[in-house]
Each structure stands twice: as structure tokens, then as C-alpha cells.
Image 1 (cartoon, rainbow, N blue to C red):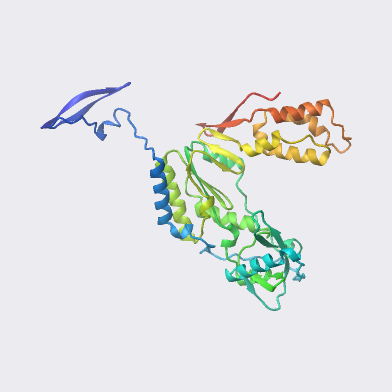
Image 2: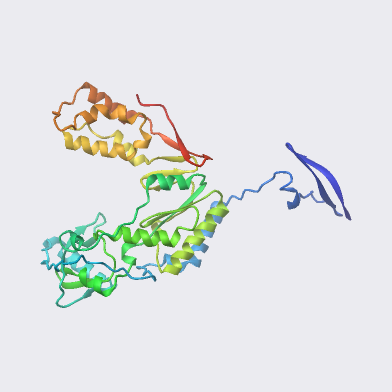
Length: 392
């Protein structure tokens, strides 16, 4: 029928806004043009059904990324640089226990079928395999490059993500997605010369290695470099080798970043292990810590490991306990004072004497309530603060 300008107010805000008059007896509707002047914002909440549908569509849109099997990086191949005056090293195959031989042979044949290993004749370099039985009963075969290739190649240095860097960048995140790359290093092909250097001596003969293998000293730096270069310009993304954490201050921002990361992985030819990925969670585990909108805290399994630890009987056991505690040193209030009686026993000239002072310090650490670091974004140089009762 027409329009009229009216005075509207909400809380401390007021504005002159246009009201449209229409014929009918339906409920009055608030137009979007009223939202900003009155300080109204919409927050979208996906129901679980909608969330699952969203994830299913995303996996369909990026089917190549979530596909079974090993990906193959489309960028440059890895090229290893052998130090000058280094002679090739040829080592014999190590015997495999009879009980493991069938599984080891089957795994080697699978790697050949998948193109990771390739039979080769008369190589100059060979490295023995190590066969490890995994918890699920499957077999893992790794090359022991410690005595062959590792001392012979140039160091490939690249800084890995630190806890402080990751946690500072995650401040303000409200929802999180964690992606897991499938057999990370093995998605990076190596050039022919490097493949020959990486040749392994197996119970089934000599095979050169066509992908970047685990156990190579420069593999972490090589892989971290390419992952950072691939994703570094996407805000809210942190990557450490095969783990990618994506955060967002809202669902919309979070999903925009997730799609951007998946697009990069698709273009690069990389694949994810779908069953290990976590999407749009309120909290996730990352770098051994629990990440949530409130901040960071120790993971429950690590807290329980500290609380259930038996009293050490010697210096080696004490060092193992302190190693676990020091991983979470930011969560231990007055750490230096709290741990001082325990560190006294580790001095070179100290004899082992587990006295009352050590018992009390050990027990206080175990019973100390777990700290949580809260995000604080008001000051750019100070991203978190701790809140907890001290243990002393």
C-alpha cells in the first residue's frame, strides 16, 4: 500500500527506518535493512543432520582428495644432494624372522604394485629394510638409512611449526577442522637419481624407492616446506607435516577456509585419510594439546599418564617422568620451584635418594589441577593467559 519512515529503537541504538505497509493479516516481518542500524546480527547454527549433509557434499565435491589409495604430488620431484667425496654404500639384506616373513613379503609386493618400489639391477647404493609389526597386525617395512644415505646427503633445513606459533595463530577460533594426509611423505615422488640412491635390499631382491621415504633425515623438512608453501596464504590454517588444522571465528569463515584448503590439495594431487579427518568440531587435539574456543589445555590421556605414573626408582625413570611433565611446562604453575627437588637428583654428582622432599614434589605435580590457557586477543603480542590455582 505504501511506505512510511518510523523511529525504531533497540537497546541503546535508534534509527529512522522505512516501514513498508502491505495488505493482509499475516505477521509483521523485520526487513534485513533494519538489522545493521539496530545492531542485529544473524548467527547460523547447522543442525547435526545439516552438518552431515554438508560434509557429505564436500567429500563429493572433492572426491579426488578423499579417494582411497596414495596421492601423487604434481609439483617438482624431490632431488637429494650427495655430499662431495662420498662413496656409495652397499649393505646386505637383514634376515626377517620366519614368523614375519610372509607378511613382509606381501607388503613388499604391495609396494611394488603401487609403484613405490621398483626392481633394479646392479645399484651402487643399497640400504637394508626393517620390518615392524603394527598393533593391528599389519606389517610396516622401513629402510634403515642411518648408516647409508643419511650421513651422505646434505642437510635440508626448514623450521617446523612450534607450539607458540600455532597457538597464537589459532586465537579467536570458534570451530575447527583437522585434516590428516594419507601416508604424507610417500605422496612426494623423487627424481631418478635420488630413487637409485634410496635403493633398498629386501628379502625379495633389490628395489629402488620412487617416493620420499620415512626414515630419511631430510624428509620432514622437505615435506614441511612444500605444505607451508601450498597453504601459507590461507588465514586460520596451521600445518605440521601430515596434520592440517583449520579454524574459523564463525561457521561461514571456517567452511570458506576448509574449501580453500581442499581446493589446494586437489590441485596439488594430494589425498587425505578420510577416516582420520575431523570436521567442524568444537574442540580438537593438535600437537598433543586440546584446542577449543576457550583456549588450549592438556589432553586427558596425557594428564592421566602423569597422574597414574608410579614413583621413579632411578634416574632414568625420573627423566622419563620429567619429560612427560615438561611437554606441558606451560601448564605447570611455578614449574621451576615445583620441580627443583626432582631435578636435584639428576645432577652429575648426586646419589639417588628418594626422600620426603622428592615424594612431596612428585605428589604435588601429579595432583595439581590441569591448567588451561585462555585466548586473549586484545593485545596482539600477548595471545593467552593462564588460569588455575598454583600447585604449591
